[in-house]
Length: 481
Ligand SMILES: Nc1ncnc2c1ncn2[C@@H]1O[C@H](COP(=O)(O)OP(=O)(O)OP(=O)(O)O)[C@@H](O)[C@H]1O
Ligand SMILES: [Mg+2]
Image 1 (cartoon, rainbow, N blue to C red):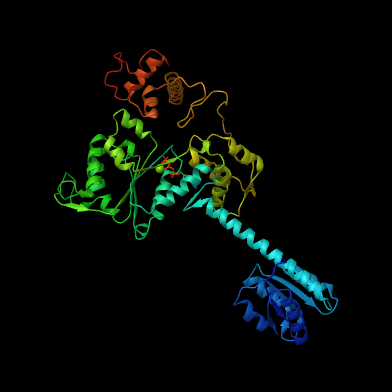
Image 2: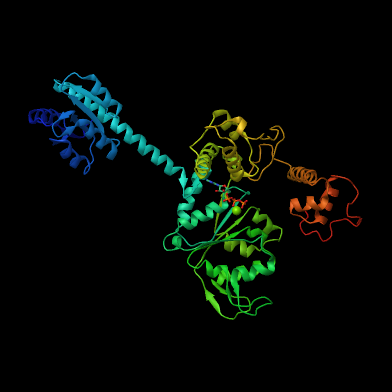
């Protein structure tokens, strides 16, 4: 069946209006008529139309005004102009101004039928495209995040399911994978009034243990030297909203106990205080460590882990969801050109290929930094390969084992593999620190003793100690193994 739609006919000549009305109604269209540009305006500004057929020469004004008016208020409505005389210039001018087609009087009923049909097809194609694009954009976007990989699509679905509940959520993933973004999305997607409430983030690794307690729970005046007045903690500040405990794996053992009690009782007591206050806070924690392994080796309390980990959202490293790279790259391109007030650039295909091939140890943050840098340095309208720094690739032959790797057919030798990873990282840390072991230990987040023990075990680096203390060994090395 040919498509039908709503058609507005604009003509000052009554016989012409009637002729067109009958023809089009017979073809199944809904017809509205107007005898002047002004009357037409009243129609197109108040209702949705698929096609407008307008005469060009009318006493009340030009059909070109109708054309302009329709295009301005309803850009997807198709306009067909009718000219009484064979004046191709006006017809062409109308086409240039956005008319879909033109008809020259006199014309046959069939002719008008065909033109309207094609205009309707164009119109529905436009509508489909728009809907498709909107739908795709919606599907690949949640809150401020974008992602089309199956892993991110699953993450979006989970987020939508989890956000309405008040359950604690633990977000895990390597550095730069978007943990904080997910935490914010959970907050924004929470039901009101929580989503309108505060989102408070605290980095548990950045605040010394001694201060963290008063930071989180507040203190009363005189609780310790320097506590000159009562101060509310972050739990109170986040009341009615979301508290984001970032780098929860860095929490010391004493704070782990205190936090557990607060989460169990849903009440906080200020440092030095006696009153317990209730709070209504959704707690979201994040870690880039393998917290379960920390629990296994006794560095993180199992009971607290279970309390926080009611739901776990794990973010895959970017290198294992490469489908997201082009989408993210374009997203950051838009973001940073807009921030600089520049017109939008494009990323050339071979530059995109380079981006898609890289491993991103710093994950999404690293990709964003690359794009931001390229946008800042590149004043031309496109990002080329030359706008990107040399991106070093790991040789593909060396099997690199990353968390989440599948076990191959023949199985693996875990001890040997772990040894290799450890050796690789130790060597890299020493290289980066110029051989200074204290620095290398810092880079690896382990103690100097632990580093020395590991180096000895794996036979890496010089045999001499660089702290002059020959008493090496594993004693007191709680993180060994
Ligand atoms: N899916 C995504 N869509 C858009 N931007 C993203 C996405 N994921 C991450 N980003 C951007 O990448 C950067 C790093 O994200 P975020 O700070 O959330 O990572 P993180 O996992 O908390 O990192 P870290 O462990 O280092 O704290 C941010 O600038 C964020 O805007
Ligand atoms: Mg973070």
